[in-house]
Length: 432
Image 1 (tube, helix red, strand yellow):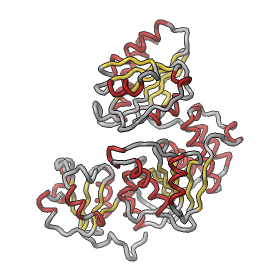
Image 2 (image 1 turned 90 degrees about the horizontal axis):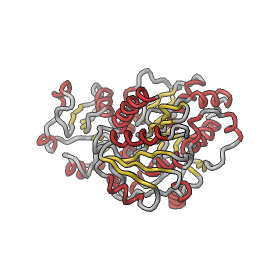
Image 3 (image 1 turned 180 degrees about the vertical axis):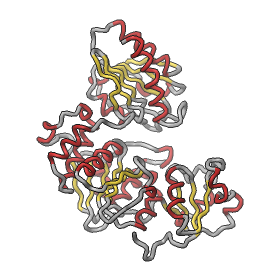
Image 4 (image 1 turned 60 degrees about the vertical axis):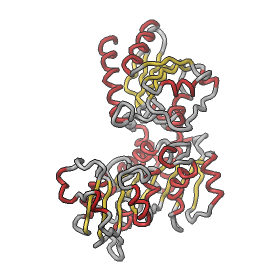
C-alpha cells in the first residue's frame, strides 16, 4: 500500500453519491481522513445519518477533496453549482485505488462488450492461478476488495463517466474495445464522450500498453490527434486467427462477442497466459446475465435475453447473425442513435416495439424493418407466441434486445431482464 505523499490521507473529504461505490469509498477512508457524506436522496442510508451533511452546510465547509460517484451528473444534481466551482477537487474511487495501491491493472472501456471482456479475462487469470480481482462497473466496487498483495491484478471495467471524473488514475494495460455514439445526454457531444474514453490512454506512462480496435473510425481518428506514451496495439477484430477453430462455445457466434474474443486473445498473448488453459476458460464461459444470454434453446425455438442493450449498435452485433427473428425493442431511445443494419439483413427480421416511446422507434425503423408496436412487453410477447404457435415446424428466434434505456418502466436493465424472463417462463411452461 502506497502511503507516502498520498493525496487522500488526513484530508477533509466529501463523498457525493451513496450507492455501492460511495459506501465502499467511505468504509475505505473513514479511518484515514475526515469524511462527510451527501446524496441527493437523503434517506438512502440511515446507518450513515450522522455523517451525512446537509445541503446548506456544504458551502460552509472547505473540502480538500470531493469523491463523486459515476452516477452523478455534475450538470444535473443538487450540488451542481458547488461542484462546478470546485472541479479541480473532484476525484473518483479509481483515483483513491490508484493512490493507495501500486498493482498492475487491466482497464477495459468501450461502448459495447466491456463486461463480457472483463469477466472472461478475469476468469482466465483465475484459472491460471493469478490473484485477479474484478472491479469497477462489474464485480465489486474498486475499494471493497480485501487482502490485496503485491501480486494482485485488478481487472477493471470503466465507464466513460468514471474516466471523465478521474484525475490521477492510470492503468498499465488499457483497452478501448470500440466507440459508437452513446451517452450523449450526459456528455453533451460525441467529442466529449470520445475524450472521456481516451483519458485512459492519455494518462498512461512509458512501459504501458494499450489495445484498441483497428478498424474503428472514431478510435483511429482520435489516435491521430494526439501523442501517447504507451505502446499501442491495434487489434484486428474482423478476422480471428486459427485459435477460433478450437472454440466451440455458442456464445461467440455474434460479431460483438467475436470482437471481445479478439481482444482477449491479444491481451492474453501479452500477459503470457497458457493458450490451452485460456481456450478451456473461453469454452466454459456461460455468458453474463442479460447480455446476449441464451435462456431457452430447444427444438424450434431459441430465446435470447439481451436486456443490457441500450443502443442500436449493441443490438446490431447479434442481429447481423440472425435469420427470421422476432426482435423485441423498446425503452428510451438514445439521442442521435441510428440503425446501421444493412437492407439485406433487415429483411430477415420483424421488429416488435413496446412501451411509451414506440413512435420514436417506429420513426427510426421506418422503411427498414417490418414493425409492430404495443403498449407493453406482456402484449408484445403474447402476440409473438401466437405467431410462433401457428407455424411450429419452423425454427424461431426471439431476440429481446431493447436498444433503449430501461428507466421508463424499470429500475435498470437487470430489472427489465428479470421481468422478461418471468413472462417467458409462463409461455414456456404452459405451451412447450
